[in-house]
Image (cartoon, rainbow, N blue to C red; front, side, top):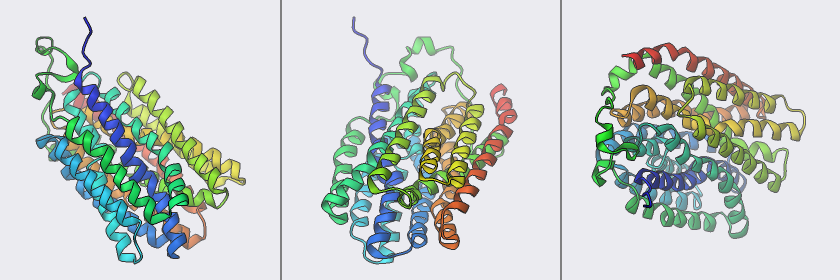
Length: 408
């Protein structure tokens, strides 16, 4: 007899494809938009970076609602709306000719991405997996790294061949063509809707399994465990979003267009490899220790970029950081899901992701402002490396509180 594949893994596959599109356009893509808009419109890096920060602030506020909405009504309507908003934003980005239009288009992009983000994906998968939740979320977010591999080179190629406006219009149509069918026909709210249980385990086998405690947002936020996750990943993602946004501009100071695209793709490929390792072992390791190691190595990569004397040293630092970058995104929902359970995950991680994103939204402006003030990227990258080391300390500081929660 042929054993049917548990439908949760089809959910994972759909989320993986959505992540490829969303991260290509909304995380890795902004480095291309920033560079191209600056070059074609003559506006400063700091000015455009502030518009990107606005986008990430909008994204942050929306995340608090996205997790709860998916918990109540499921991922299908949320991701459908996200596809439409992201498509509209990308078409608008290609047509901007006034500063206010940049802010409006980027804000729309931030709102659309919130519906297709780590929060949306991990909330969509939370009811479907218990025993294999680490592997499921890590596998789905492999798409984020694939987005880095294909996103920047594809955007640079299309812009070079078609021009900025036409290329962005084409990309906006691709978003609709890829994401809409998945959100409408693959996404489901809960395994119970299909007569299934989490992990595909028979209901009789799950009868003796204890259910996770239901937490309110206020109760969770009072714990040191959640506060340390919020602070650590707020700092780490401020660095990540800021660095990835400015990555193309930084590399173009030292490399040609082809070498820049190759470096970005290689860094994203290494992020994919790092996520594969996490997907393989995430259900069997201490995720806080793993997170601390990831943050430390990422900080070392940024330190190499800061202290580099040659273009090859800069490339080496970018690649080291790239190897860890993917898991920085993946680890926060894994920690929250493991420590607080599935019952309240959407609401708790939605709130956590909102707070993290409001801090990390400062990343583009942080790098852009310091770039304009100092005339280069040495200072912002150096401070970013220090932030990663502080984040690693914060993650470890919450281990005792997390252990107490697990024993309660």
